[in-house]
Length: 120
Image 1 (cartoon, one colour):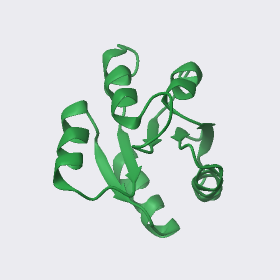
Image 2 (tube, helix red, strand yellow):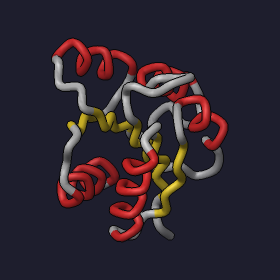
Image 3 (cartoon, one colour):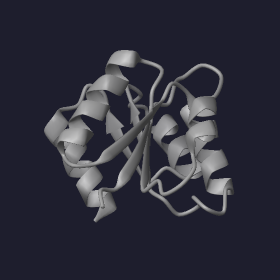
Image 4 (tube, one colour):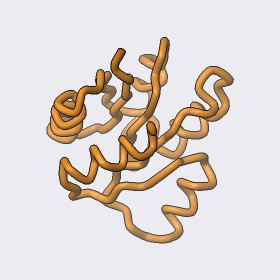
C-alpha cells in the first residue's frame, strides 16, 4: 500500500510539480492550497506533510504547530518546502516542529531522495 503525502502550497504549478514527482515515485498525494485547506484534508492515514512556508489564510509554521498539537498526527514527518533560506526562518520551522527543510528551486531527484529518507 503506497504511503500518502499531503502537499501544501498556494502555487498551483508547485502543487502540480510536487504531486507529479511524488506520484511517479509511487506515493499517493493529496494537495491543499494553504494551511487551512490542509487541516481540513488531514484525515485518515497521512504519512508525511510537505508544506510551503508563506501562504495566505494559514502559513506553514502555523500549520506545523496545529499538526503537532493533533494527537493523531503528532509524530508524522513535516517537511518545509520554501524559498526561504535564512537561519532564523529555519530555526522557527524547527521550533514549530518541522522535520526538515527543502529550498526552492529543487530538483525532482532531490525531493524524492529527501522524502524516501524521511519515510524510511
